[in-house]
Image (cartoon, rainbow, N blue to C red; front, side, top):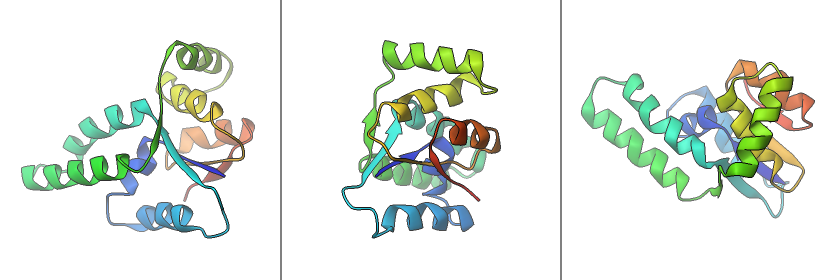
Length: 138
């Protein structure tokens, strides 16, 4: 089983709240042997500036960045190369999805199935289901 975290799930993993519990439960699910935890290379690029919008306090922002980077160290990172970008462009042309979300989908498609796609971004839900992913959200 491949567990794919989009940017919202990566951030949720580091912020106390109900979404964090959802991500932790998915990652700790003992029924999924040979798990691969993954994210697209773009997830970190999106997460770091998002941290600055979560708090005005610099110490909290630094702690969140440390937590995101620590979580990142445990993920397989899918490169955003030309193959990924070409597939993302095709998805963005045929699905009701933003290009940045299409890049996450294209990256996830490159991984071994079955894929459990974790997101807390409502516009992604229908497209992820349509692509055959097992979607985890709130």
